[in-house]
Length: 105
Length: 246
Picture 1 (cartoon, rainbow over the protein chains, first blue to last red):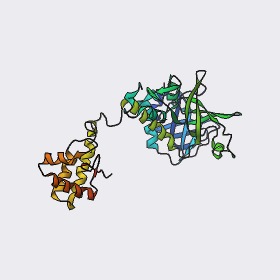
Picture 2: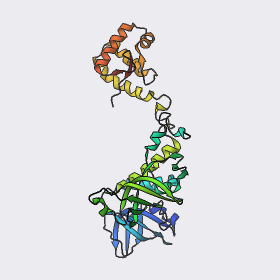
Picture 3: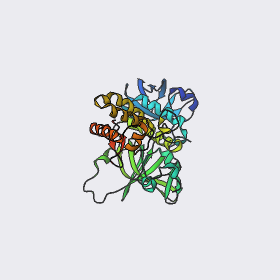
Picture 4: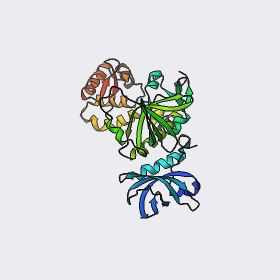
């Protein structure tokens, strides 16, 4: 399949998903040109691509690959604005891992 | 129906056919074929609703095919062109690659390849809908695999006696509301609140016998409660049940 599964995770799960494709929803804390820091249950360092259009304070959902240094190499980012309920989004991550059978192989 | 365990006996086939189930795309891809239909969690499915990000759009003569990806998998959805439509669907302009959308439709299989024929596909305005949908799909999955919430948690007395839970709340409600009623009416109300019963409630003869009071007195008490709207008549004028105010 041309679009692989992208499990939803938070910062504490990064080490379990090294070298895998993941999906992380968080709030943009810092933008530093080529890199950025995301708050998703903890800080996530991201290496951006040219197509990312991030705004500090906005929620963003990024799809990328976790590298050996636990940085997220971003492949696609979707700005989700400023009205995201992070508690609900984090509950989704929890639900997807607890009831994995309907979410991921 | 073989899947009666999933339904109330009176539910039957129609309910199944008319159901609308929130699902993840992985659940659609995992759906088991059953004749012309499909099953998810061993329940027949009909209409499905799901969300996804648009990964590809292919506009063809008779339909538009979108590829949707929700992180759990991806699937093609086809929206057939409405030949009678006089103007273009204004939502279509916002269905662009990368956008999240919600779709409603039916699962089809063609040469072992699944796709969904959608009646409606619309962009998502409030991004929390994505979280909502994932949680709703989980809740419905758990309903089908583990049964209704509260059935085995012990949190609700309803598991033992379906009417029990309502009656308890009815009694608590009654203590405040019974002030203006005759002592006999209060006794009858309390008895109706606490006595196990079916949805039909209790007959005034039974109430009179159990409380050891005259049927005429019970009838008067019943009239009193009926006027106040605390109870209602069920199968006949002499059979009453507590009117739940909620």
